[in-house]
Image (cartoon, rainbow, N blue to C red; front, side, top):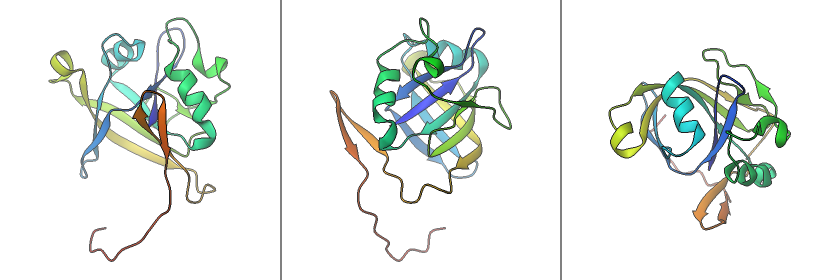
Length: 159
């Protein structure tokens, strides 16, 4: 589960996102589905940029609260005590409290109208080096979440 931050005319916005997937390594591409009823859909379509912010379980309550409110009515950064941080390549802000942040731009809109599916290129990745083995959260549906658990390491020739 991630939080997507976008930039608007009045204020930046945050939405909670469950449906996303890595699509390619080089260049790094991520696909995500955002409902066309969401405020973030309009902002992403208009600006072509966003940040994928990866929270830890410590932010779980704020992640859910962001997902249960609309940026049309509330400035979620202020409402939920989250800190916007400027990005290097885009105008949308990162969320400082998140473990990792991916600055993205939309590179393919062909599936947006039919499927609400955006293809994003990751321009820069940020990670908090102070958070070792972060416990990320994953949405399982209907208010159920799973917390990332034990890590294992296996032999691999992959980078």
